Structures are given as structure tokens and as C-alpha cells.
Image (cartoon, rainbow, N blue to C red):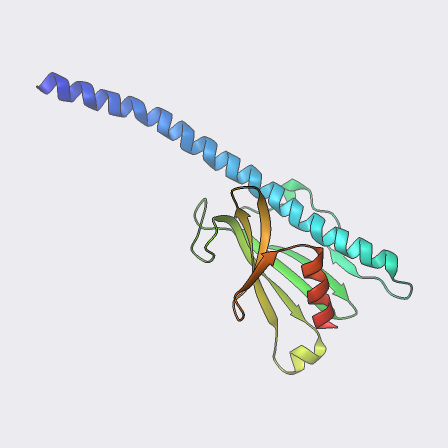
Length: 171
């Protein structure tokens, strides 16, 4: 009886190596996916700014940072992107979720979360800053950035159409 228990214990301990290896691989995979997602978010915003700037003749939108390589992503801490047109600002803040994958703040599993704030001087004078939440979601068919408006429960893809609607609002 004791030999059987000892054998089962040895098998369980040996199984830990495989379990730890799988967990380590999952963690590395999520870290790489987070970096790609951060670059993707920057690319969405950059394409929006570039496309709009090509249409403008008198002023240009500023986008900071202008470049965002994968190593710019901060796994621990906050990441910021900002679109500015003469004091009308879209500020995007995002960070890794506390858990590897979370459903804490949004029902769809996600690995990055944050918010986008819209403001201008008029909004600041009234002490109003519009804010909506953003999440990098792991969906069945594809992974994508999504927004969520907690006031209206509206949700959708974080894309150029969404950025156009926010910029229209802040103008």
C-alpha cells in the first residue's frame, strides 16, 4: 500500500514539470500577444491620424508617440497614446490585466485593459472628461480591441469609425 502511494506521489511530482512548463509557455505566449496588441492599437490610431492629416489643409493632428515598437510596451505599469488637435485630445491609457487572462471588468476574456478619455478646454471648464473603457479581447474567431461605454452599455470594435465618432464629439 505504501509503495503504491509513493509511486503515485512520484508520478504527481513528475507531472509538475510538465504543468510548470505549460504554464511558463502560456505566460510567454500571452506576453508576446500583449506586445503585438499594443503595437496594433498604436497602428489603428496612427492610421487614423495619418488618414485624417492627408485630408487636412490648414492644421495637422499630433500623435504621441509617433513610433511604437513592441519593446515600447510596458508589461508592468501604464502605457499611453495621445492624439491632439489644437487642444482637443483623445488620450488612450492601457495596461496588462492583473491575471494572465481576465473577465473581471468585461465579460469577454481579455489580456489588456484601459480607457480612452476625450476632452477639450470647454469640457475641462465644466469639469467633464468623457471616458470609455477599452479591452484587448481573446474572441473565438479573432483577437481584437473593443471599447465599452459604461453609461450606455454600448460596445464595439476599437477602429477608425470609433475614433472618428470620438473626434467628432470632442470638436
